[in-house]
Length: 220
Image 1 (spheres, helix red, strand yellow):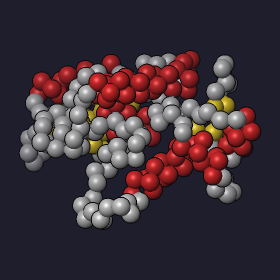
Image 2 (tube, rainbow, N blue to C red):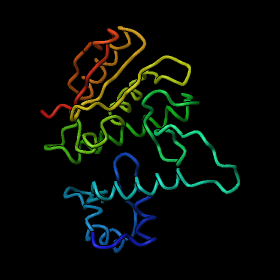
Image 3 (cartoon, rainbow, N blue to C red):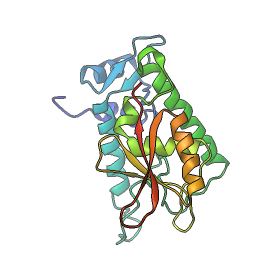
Image 4 (cartoon, rainbow, N blue to C red):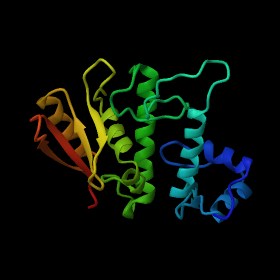
């Protein structure tokens, strides 16, 4: 990309589906994004357009800037926000530890829609349309992808003062750590992730003896 997208193109990017990256816009707008390698046209009908990894980065940069911009109507806050809070208005999988993480009917609908969108993204981008294993988007958003699989299956994320699962990044490539309140919850999380196409192993923290899961997206 030789120059940043125009304001109109940014609006199209910002309006993309937060999970699948599906775009809506005029033919000229979509063609311009493809030319800049921010989008691609799917080869199978209905030939929808989707964000490329570069397009997703532009979208995420915009959302991050909007979330971190100071509100002129409120005094500046000295405490940092949780990194995965939904302050930008964009759907975010709950990784555990968020404040005020309610699981009302609207949240349940959002999670269901996001999971169905992710399955559709698998179908459109995996070889042979396979939906039983993670796609490239999930491999670049490991924590969010694992958390979405858990939340979509009905597992409860940990709140600021409540027990539940917590998904965190690890130093290992393509692996996340999943912790739960007890051994039973961990086993249930492991079963859900395996059904969603992840390879899962149970491990023990050397210092504390606490059990946790190490999960990686399955390739075959």
